[in-house]
Amino acid sequence: MQDIAPAVALRMMHITTRLAAGIAAAFSLWGFVLYSYGDAGARSQVAFFLALTMIGCIFCLTHLRPAALIVAAIGVAPYCVFFTFADQGRSRILAVILAVVGVGMVATILRNYVDFAELVASRRALMAKHKETLRLSDENSRLAKQDSLTGLDNRRAFIAELMALSGEAREVAMAFVDLDGFKEINDDYGHEVGDELIKTLARAFAGRAPESAVLARIGGDEFAVVAAGPDAKAQILGFADTVCQRLRSPFMVGERKVRVGASIGVAAAAPGDCDGHELLRRADVAMYKVKANGKFGVEVYSPELDAERRRQTILMDEIRFGLARGEFEVFYQPIVEARTSAIVSVEALLRWPRRPAGPIGPDAFIPAAEAGGLIEPLGLFVLRRACEEFSGFADIAVNVNVSPVQFRDREFERKVAAILAETGFPPLRLCLEVTEGYLIDDPQRAAAVIAALRAIGVRVVLDDFGAGYTSINYLQKYGFSAIKIDRSITSRIAFDEKARVLVNGIVYLANGLDMLVTAEGVETEEQACILRIAGCQYLQGYFYHRPQPMIDLLAGALALPQPAFAVA
Image (cartoon, rainbow, N blue to C red):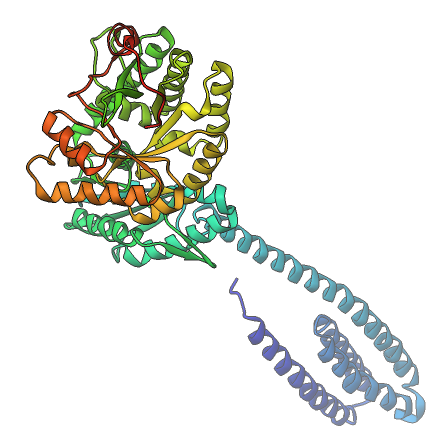
């Protein structure tokens, strides 16, 4: 059955009503004219025919009440009057019967119309509910594929699109974007600021994504973009580069200026090379390579990354078991007073001498520990061991390196205080060395940690000064007790005039800010002499002492009487 639009149906009903009125009037007039012909029997038949026809028409128009009532009014009422006076009243009984039947028909029309109206209203309500159900179904389907915060595709929709594109005979490339420092923004400013930042980033990423690419938010602080075509990889790499460039500048969220970085993994596949799930895994592997290398950058997947990741996984298991089995050891490198060469402090350095597969250096296992979430127990192990072993040396301070991962721990200050209390080590003799990387990643959190440590008496030293982009503002803002000149500058000071000028400037600046200066990496007497003349208070390097276990340190350097304690 063909569906008729409501407007068309209404117009047809109006036409039918008007036609019913005209036809009923014409039929009545024709009946009146016809009645005058014939004898009494013929007239009775004409009267019966007219009455039956009118009643039938009214019955057929029951569901169109206006038309039915018009036919009753135009057809039945005039006949009732006509038959009341026709043939000297002999047809009056016919008029009465016709009137009774007409009244009954009108009553039936009104009652049936109410039922019909209720049926129509019920059907209309049913159709409205059906439409609402369809709308809600479409809305649920849309929401199931859309991120509610940004309006981008969500993980489910992205995976479906990725699988569809990887099944086509085209090159497919994607980028996996994991934000650096977003959790700290949420913790420091609240989730409302974090949500606004996510929406701002979504708009920024959408404006830089290739025209035919699909951009999605696949996690709390994770985005992904995929493109297909002969130049898909080039498009995705261009997107990654522009994103990194934009993230070098801060974002305004309300009245707050916030910084966030991103580790981006890129993976590309030729037609038929792999499915969407494998492509996503490859991009994820490349992204974690960026994380392991210090975050904020772009890495393109290669098969070597899988082999490296397997090695890293094995190494992390070894670190975990090695810490439990006591395979790690703490070595100490003395720091001397520049004028007298007397030991005033030691730097605690983690070593792995009892590794079953053979010793490896910290440059190999520290990045793996940071990437695998094991640097915190290792760092606390070094801190506790150093405090225990030097608690009886009243004249020696202890320097312990702190990983940025430890700084991000909200309980870090409490854990340091707990170790100091358990070991009885004086806070004034503890110096925690931190590099500038975390100062850039999360300056607010870094300032809070340093302030809390200074409040309990612990000194904080800025390590590797001059190796990165440390600004004078950092020195003023954080209130470091000392700075350590990086070995990359120390190694050039004997033959590079610019390096000597730089050291002089660093010493002058630090002293002006009431900070002590230690130069590390001193390997020759000439370097030591130049640094001493430049004004460095403390020196550290192979020229004086190599890192060594506590037992060797006790048998050698610390066996001699030492001068009064000074902080390095």
